Image (cartoon, rainbow, N blue to C red):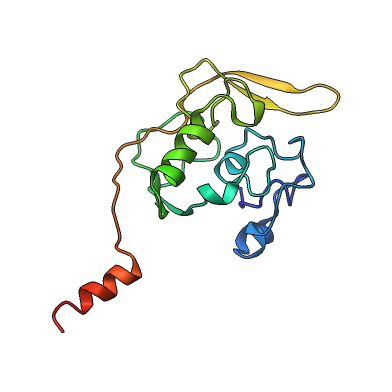
Length: 176
């Protein structure tokens, strides 16, 4: 997978688009209000619903987020964990912990009523227990995947607080 957003490359992955950090993040969902191209329950859409009117003021919950992988990739033809140490290190930077990170994690990833999805949780990072559901809107009828299990296992976490620029200036001038 090259990482091209589904909303920009719905028919097939696009390695050039996936590698272009400007283009692959320059999109909104206004052309897909029903979630037929990119399902409402998709992790990318839950994590950053962008212009989704059903969510309300999306900007209140905006985060700066980055991740990087570690360990060897799982071979393409393997479906079972081989025990190698691998995963993703994720970091989010925000100004208001409860309104941003905690809200997105609890309400958009784990709250079952995200955009009217009833009891569905985020497919990747949701607190799924093997009884989960994931809806794929299709025409003429939607498709539902049942038995969604936990995909991500969190091994640790930390909240680190950074002082604001004004606080850093104040600290720098204490000894002056």
